Length: 207
Image 1 (cartoon, helix red, strand yellow):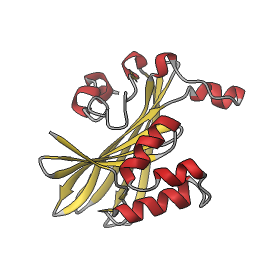
Image 2: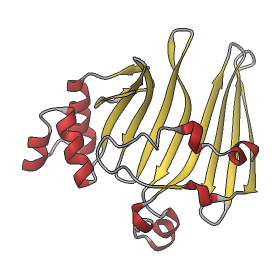
Image 3: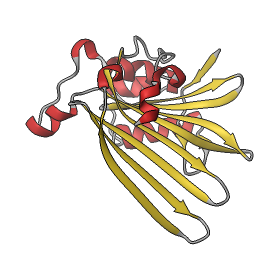
């Protein structure tokens, strides 16, 4: 059973912010310190803000717990939904996977300088990042999907002993028909989006 808390997660500090800290960041970073009357009313609690933000396409934050353990952090912003999946590594919170869902057709945005949503407001899984770290190295793999049916693959490895970073990049074909998913129906409707074991198709792992 998932438990949702309307709090921001700070990956640098590897900690969940308090309600006051989350509200302060919304005020400063989302509203530029100048909320209107409706926004001020919604800033009473982080859940009040999340309800308002969902209805008005503003940014809001959720941390999700599973079996009393931190499971993922959701940043629902104006342009996309970014989900960081979290686990524990030697007692410290560790981000092991990121899924990025675009709300708009970014090809149109870049080529025509306008924003158009997908049919039925569907989301497009545009990026999958996975992370691995041990005593010797730190690895980041990025899989970036293109709507025309291709994917860019970037793999970065940091050698902790030699303090050197190496990067490999390649492009391949990809079937992106699986990448479209229905958007949340309300401000806490995320069970499909955070079910990464069902979302990550076997063919993604073969790219």
